[in-house]
Length: 312
Ligand SMILES: *[C@@H]1O[C@H](CO)[C@@H](O)[C@H](O)[C@H]1NC(C)=O
Ligand SMILES: *[C@@H]1O[C@H](CO)[C@@H](O)[C@H](O)[C@H]1NC(C)=O
Ligand SMILES: *[C@@H]1O[C@H](CO)[C@@H](O)[C@H](O)[C@H]1NC(C)=O
Ligand SMILES: *[C@@H]1O[C@H](CO)[C@@H](O)[C@H](O)[C@H]1NC(C)=O
Ligand SMILES: *[C@@H]1O[C@H](CO)[C@@H](O)[C@H](O)[C@H]1NC(C)=O
Ligand SMILES: *[C@@H]1O[C@H](CO)[C@@H](O)[C@H](O)[C@H]1NC(C)=O
Image 1: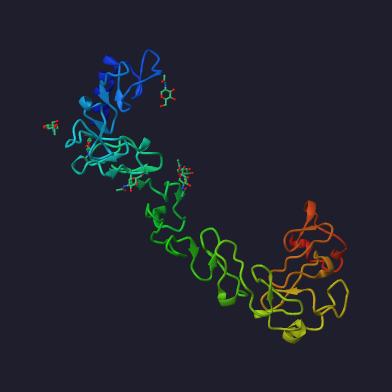
Image 2 (image 1 turned 90 degrees about the vertical axis):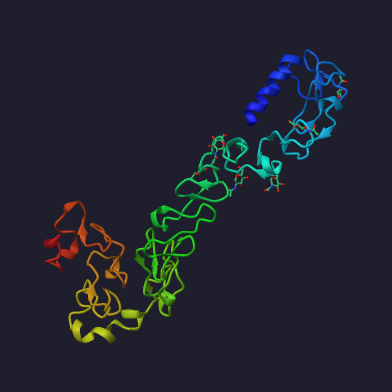
């Protein structure tokens, strides 16, 4: 309808006046008409009305009954201006913001949707998108990666929570919320993104996975490796650590501090939780348990740990 009417107007103007803007006339459209809302061929001739004005015989001085209508007389709303629709109600409705170029038919259906929009009236976002410009992606935690076009709310996949399912459930973190928070985290909960948390007493580190200095073992409750392990460790504990007898507070790791750090560890000490350490020359790996370059004998420690290299 809009296009049809506009084509008629253009034809009309073209035939009689050339293609000047309303209010202009002349070969190069550089002259002003007497009446500013007319299309004209000379200063005083009014051939047709600018959109939103009506009655050529009155030199188009009258506005349509609604500014959003194209009209020919005061009671008639022939068609709607671009961006408006609803002939029955004098074009008082706005085309959806998802309509390309902001134009729609008189029934509100868009000619075409802007990118990322969909639906007859282009008022929904394409699958997986939401927000004012349909430019935001539904959370990975949303079931089927689908969410409300309006505000991004959705039903959550396992391990996710929140209206937009953009957080992990309590006690979990990581890309798919599958990593458990460290037991050192207060309330056993941590930040969804990276597992960071506030630490319980005796724990430290961003993710509270390490005992503070001088603490060891389960819940970092022990103050001395000896307290917990002197019976099981026996007389050899300490003696094996490069011959440094009496170094009882170093050289052990694991849940109950029962594992010896690897001989490849600098100073023969390692992280209490997992045994990781900085490596001596010729050793490699997180726990320095492998010889570099495929060596069977990494270094001097071969003499003290004759079985160590054989298993590598
Ligand atoms: C037409 O009107 C405009 C402003 O209304 C004015 O600036 C311009 O000089 C006029 N042109 C002529 C040819 O009278
Ligand atoms: C307005 O136009 C319609 C047809 O387009 C006509 O029937 C009606 O009489 C006109 N009204 C006035 C007040 O001119
Ligand atoms: C239509 O849009 C105009 C301006 O863009 C605004 O002032 C008006 O309130 C809107 N009307 C409706 C019904 O949303
Ligand atoms: C709206 O009008 C257009 C053009 O007349 C038509 O193609 C379309 O089917 C109509 N849409 C509805 C929902 O009636
Ligand atoms: C939507 O797009 C407009 C214009 O491109 C921009 O000004 C506005 O910030 C965008 N809004 C959002 C929520 O992206
Ligand atoms: C469409 O959505 C994508 C994905 O979110 C976004 O990157 C892009 O900017 C959006 N396009 C427009 C025109 O807003």
